[in-house]
Length: 238
Length: 94
Image (tube, rainbow over all chains, first blue to last red; front, side, top):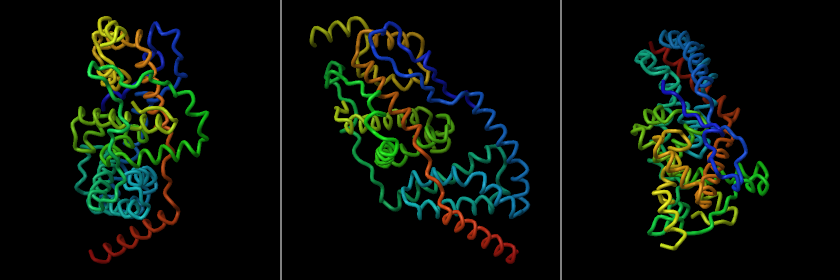
């Protein structure tokens, strides 16, 4: 297991910027220890259920369903955007888990296997359906002059006004709409990273990408989401 | 290059574009010490990049606050009914 990314306000502060408004203390990544402990506990709890599942125990499948369906549904729904499609994917994932439990060797974590089944099925369905709402990123990415400086200046710090301008529900809607416009693989990476708390390495395994490609996709998706928020607030995405 | 840009470039060796490309590594603490030093040095004199960093961090933190899609009760029942049916069927078949 990789050490999880950590970001504290301390190591992100920029020295010598007393004149600049500072971001409030927000820890946006869970601590490595807490995350590792959660994973170890889940791994331990799953072992007995997997053995029972291999023996064809129906109650074990229901117990596994109760444990993972909410998280897997969120991933499938986020990637697909349709309740009916997500239902179909989750149904297939659990049925596949039951049928193929014997082939599960335990070299991967059981939950990773379930997530991978879910992501692959959801991405496959998106590719077949051609229903996704993705937009061109270019309009929402930062722009630079030939010498490498920001093309629109000054860049406005709207970070403190976002919460003031939008009520909780409006902000959620805005974020959901922006998320929906990401390319399916990028959306998967953001959901697995930001909502499921997975490491870049875990996401790479899940999506069949290199760790470097995952980082690039996450960064580009975050630049896009930042640009969408900036434009909604009446500022330039650049 | 405007006079201000010329000063910025001379003092930091990194442009705003390069700084933007490094934000992900900076926030995940994966930059080498020398690159991290350059990054911070640029931010000391470039308020545009400071503001950009703040808004990037804000976008990342609100994305983490998105509420998960809850599985509707009906969908949950449908899937469990399907699984029970399939298990019964597979039990009969074997």
